[in-house]
Image 1 (cartoon, rainbow, N blue to C red):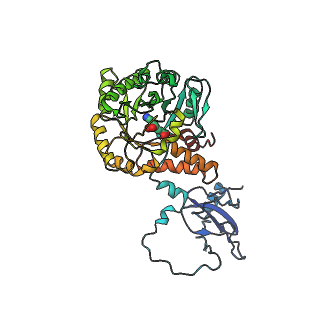
Image 2: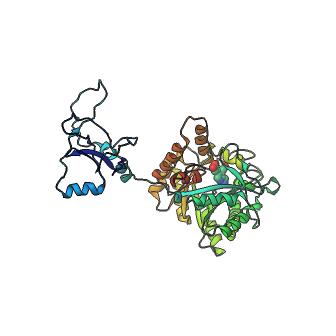
Image 3: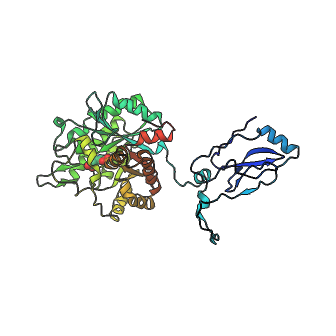
Length: 428
Ligand code: PBG
């Protein structure tokens, strides 16, 4: 009976001979490679299975079944140690004495099973928060700068996208609305309309999928005719405390609709405490706050602003978002957000700011979120389309690196695609 040997992770194929018979067995975790020896003939390698081999080397079925092997052993035909075969380097390889190393870190990387055993960081669909763009229309409208992303119709496309994401284990979503110009104003009052797009979408989703986690964005920019996250004074200054007043109303309105986690992305001072108090005053003690703690004034948000048509009409966001040159300043924000009662601290963007993620991880016991923003997504997509990089591998590596830096959860436009890979359901 044929026994098929394939070099499963962690096992090295061992081919050996006993009493003229060729046996194929599995010997765990050896770098030695053995060859079959037929009595009276010259030894030659039939199958070489290297533990560190990148490719799985197919091994022909040569030996006996497990039962036959057992029977042979029971009958006293226990195999001798197999003859050693030392694989040769190519012609011209220098002959050297082994280096006298007490530590060879490659030993812990020599086989897939060992590498898996010592892997320090893992990725799971449960780590992902899927950002979704929604609009009032019926159709899903592709976003030019973000291939694969759409402004979803809140009644159809949104429900379908959530269905597909749940199918691969993604249960957390954050909603970003595209608001019609007619509803925008200088004070962004549409942000707390209980029948506005976001509260309606939350109610629909919660009704259909009660177990999902809905994060919301708390900021005025989608609702502001000035395209800023706060109210703009006539001299161009973004008004802090007046904006916070609006944000509190916005957060309460989202909580009333059923939001699980409200996420202020505006970077006004003192908004976490104010929102906490506003939520509690309305009985929403169980609604969490994910604070955009260290949000930088970044050019990586470009595609997002196209998606929502939310570019600032003038100026930039540098008086509220942080200077990309600054590191210590993130600690000032961290201390404030912790003291004010944030439940989760977020760093944004992600990959160019791994040091900030690590800084927060090492200085707070709260869960840390990283936002892999639109520009990061678009760069990887573009590199893939141009065949300059392997999109899927770079996607998975970038997400793993965000986890390694210290992120518990990752907001990423790759959420569904990456989760599909993790579930072994490659493709879209
Ligand atoms: C605005 C907001 C922005 C993003 C999330 N919330 C843009 C901005 O600050 O201008 C960017 C997300 C992305 O680029 O993916 N409150």
